[in-house]
Length: 292
Image (cartoon, rainbow, N blue to C red; front, top):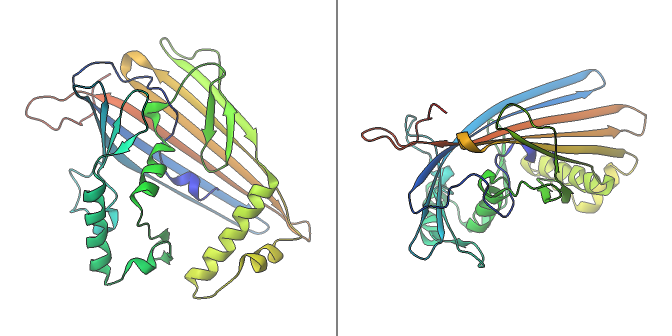
């Protein structure tokens, strides 16, 4: 769970900040994450971030067409490993969201696999380079990760349910005392299911074994942690600034593990994601930040 917290975005059902108009709107989505591990005489931390672009337009049928892409306009040529982007979603009232560019995504995926000189048999495998990554091959999985963290569809209402990413839990959002002028603040939290955390810990053991060239079964992984105790909590806070076209989400999580000898390990993570409306200025990059 703590590792997955480092992926960006948020999910829900009704748009909060997007205007109902036929005009195209542009957004930047930025994220930063930090993790901290402490246990016995060892400790460690990591941090990072990423940036995305989102274009939202309304078609003649009143459907929203949302295009998500990596914000790499000023960076080096995009590696084939990032075949998932761009993603184009069509959202119509009363209908399920449709992935509009599936064929394009599959073509990019096939080019990525061919460049690696591998077949689809490696899909789902874990590899280690400068960090651990899983080879994804399913466009729907890419969409699921995106929509799990979709700030453009969060339903900010008192009592509205929100699915906490990477926990398997839904929590009610509660409106808090407003922050600065024009800010709306909502939050929700939950204690994490120890059985869920135990399953996550066992899966981590299997992944570590896989990238080491070993094989550990589910039963063997479960046996390794049979004497450990797990607890944890997760919380989310949304700060919406409708006039500025901005929404910020801060997701925090903490997992506590007590070993058979009583040794305690804690893992903490924080992910801050901001979706900001920007202007499409003539003759310039339409996704440069506005001055709101």
